[in-house]
Length: 187
Image 1: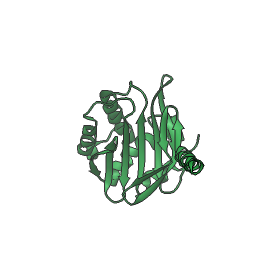
Image 2: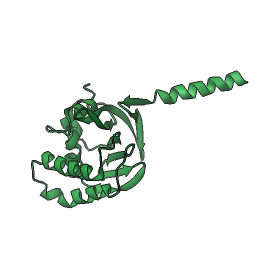
Image 3: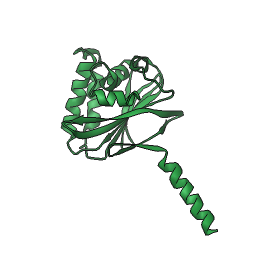
Image 4: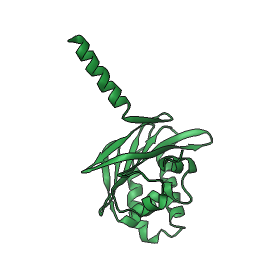
């Protein structure tokens, strides 16, 4: 009986160990579920600055894709997971990075999104610390739901908002080429 129990525990441990991927010091799951939609890891990468790992990012889709335009244009549930791995990522720096990202993503023309961008930035009202995990989930025909450490922060409506937000990581001028290529499964 002890051998059977040990075998079952070993099998479960092996199964759960293979259900994740390590990206630097971060561990990201291969699959996520939001509501009724199962998403699979498309790819993952690390955002670095001056050889310091800042956060790992994973892109979760229903079907794998290496085409950033198709992903940005798609009206289907998808998600970006950000796993903070450095104390250098602070609340103030995250807000600045998001503001700069939206400016790049919209070529400086944020006017149509300003109210929703401000609402999104308020999701970073609490301090950000190492090991925080943010899930940015676009829900088909609804909008973007944001989560911090599993706690829902709110919903921002509009596919146009999702397009600009996801373009921060997947656009022509991404936050980092390394994280973009990783999320697209090109690395």
